[in-house]
Image (cartoon, rainbow, N blue to C red; front, side, top):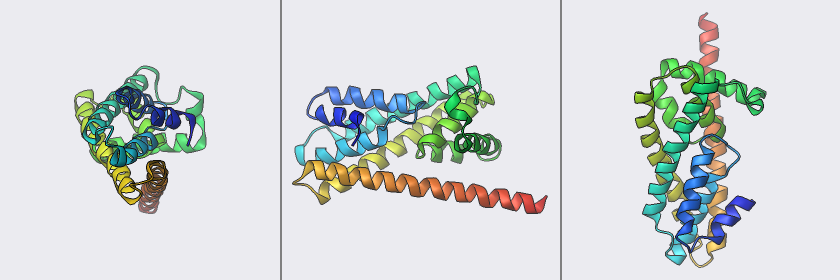
Length: 206
């Protein structure tokens, strides 16, 4: 586990854990290296055996933080555009931004909701939404819905791992993190494959 996750786990028995989780999820909305998913999963897993923190409060905090972070990302994109930061000019991120721009024109709702599960993908989609002037009155309710679904998913993974290793909370946290990472990679690959297939069909049609 990384330093940030260790910090959250160290505060798991304190009310401050909710503040830390909120801050992590908000920052993760526009800065992907922050490990909000793994922290939420780990905390939820430990909560099964220790009784704290409360899973429903974790879901609430994660939902609110996700919506705030996504809207900050949207605001940044609207103000400075989607290619102004150095880390966005790499081939993978640039490709994600290009896919996001195309997807927002044709299937904005499903794209915004599913992008929440892919760290780089959600930042690319949300910043591109801002940069392309996607209507904010349509965008922000979707971030609430997407944030709530993502929070439920993350906590559910943690609870499942916690029940598997109920007597060993740290092992439960580790199992939950591994499951979350694997599912995230699988989802990222599936979404990328779908985009490539659709792009291939458009190319053949042209």
